[in-house]
Length: 327
Length: 285
Image 1 (tube, each protein chain N blue to C red):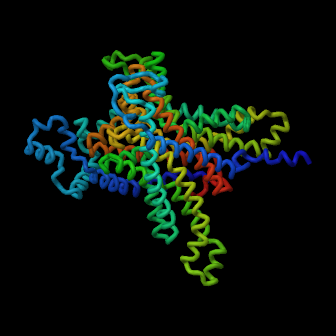
Image 2 (cartoon, chains in turn green, yellow; image 1 turned 120 degrees about the vertical axis):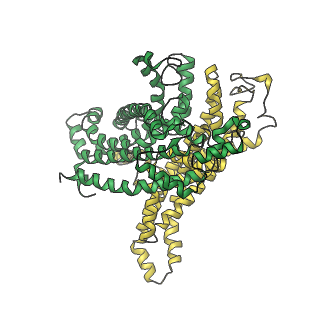
Image 3 (tube, one colour; image 1 turned 90 degrees about the horizontal axis):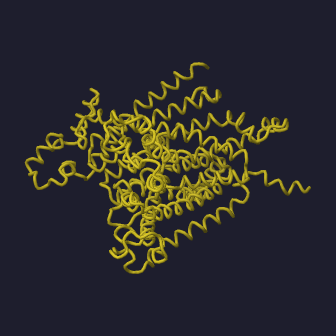
């Protein structure tokens, strides 16, 4: 019974071993279908200065004059050596672009993950404990409304209110513009994170609230909870005591499995706040027809989702020993 | 015995009167949909045009939601944009529902097909939803067609899973075996035993996909990979508003997002109510 973790890891690694190549072929096919000419996207407004010979030279330098199968083979060969190719928009190796921008995104996603988990679980427990009364109704209404709000619109409203209207918080970027990296204080960095993290937390909170509420309601109807309340435990005591233990494992599992969606949300949040992370790079790669960078980001986010799902599986088994049997 | 009348209160709220709830949400959602489509058609000529005399005005009786930097009325533009979004959303959600039906039912045709559908599902869920949307929209070269294809290709897994499960349960049931033993053809069984219970699920699935479709459409348009910028769309309006809120023009962003949220919210509620109605056991909360 104790050996559930290696078995789980082995099973998931086998899945990754066939998922990754399939996804790579799929992504490459998708990206080579794009009708956008990368050379034209690169040349942009300088059309008059760059002649057809130079265009051909650029295309040849990027290997665009060769057939797609050959390009894919080349790309795979590079990948085997740990090289994801050269980003067109950033004019740097894709690996380097991702490595430089991932920490900024992970900081947002990590903080939002923790914040939405704590808030979502707590609100869900309160809603479940006050089932049918006004706090429950208010919390559920907020959760449902949040789920239906476009995250980037919430971000714009936050900027309009807190940055422009009240002037409390900065509206853009990870650091004050025009300052050298060495001059930026830690307090500055935190101040710049508040609004993006708040935006991103909105994305993950609604399903968590509703789900936690649901599992607490199920617990409160159980004989164990009835027994405790016969001894005088109030619903709120039950919710944040045994109810929390009952609901937290499921909530964490759900939240980890949804962590990939936080990356999706961060693409939009980074677009609003000009946050120098991987989400912004995704948008620039897509609008600049930067195929190598898009491939790299696709694979990186695939691994991100995979890691989230794996952690979710581990969390589920840690929380509920009954799941530890053969999956 | 007076306690017995209070018993239904112990039921979870959503199980109390699911039919009436679904009807109420349905009427609200369809009324809003109708109002948006009719309102966009009935907009007076010139309501969307640029007017230098009324630039960047806050909400006031003549312009209920204010005007933008080019003097365009935000309320009228929001209505036109919503109509555009709703049409794109309906088209994309419809295409996605058809994909879900085809793939979900294909999974019942045999082991091989089931594996292939499982594989496609894994792949579609392997990337963050929005990243996959960006990739497909990019592959299509952006634009309205790109949005429709991207949304259609990414929203089917959940409904396909439900349909697959349902179809396999029905196919394995005794009454299907008895029907077959009585000499009914496969087609007859498919028509009478499979189609009938699945239709409500499919309708509910379509309604649930629709709000996601319009929200994702707006997201794609917002980052410049969606509906062409010269057409009024919520995503484009919000991305334009980004430049104006720094000048304190909050109203430029308020109305488009609020409109989109209202449409998404009402359909989300309608879809959930329908889903509970078609799946009373509440298998998945």
